[in-house]
Image (cartoon, rainbow, N blue to C red; front, side, top):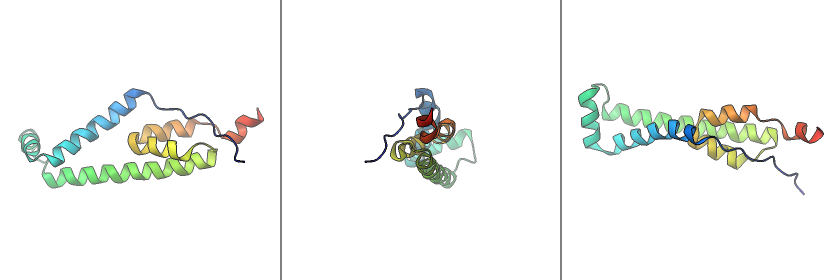
Length: 110
């Protein structure tokens, strides 16, 4: 029988808003030619190629953070899937929260 996992701690709602709202806006700019033209009127270097590159870089960064969270959670005896999912969605705040979590074996000794 596997040992029980420590309770999962979800990040506060404002982290999801602060990280995911800009990503959603970026996604809308990438898929909307009209949005791209409108954004380029205000900021000339926001070309469609730059926006696509930025979105791809964001996706790679979040995937890397999810992989890191999966590894860190496993070492601490926490739910790998929950922490990796949260880090994939929210990014660095989840990694910061996970780094503050205690190792499950240490909490069992106390």
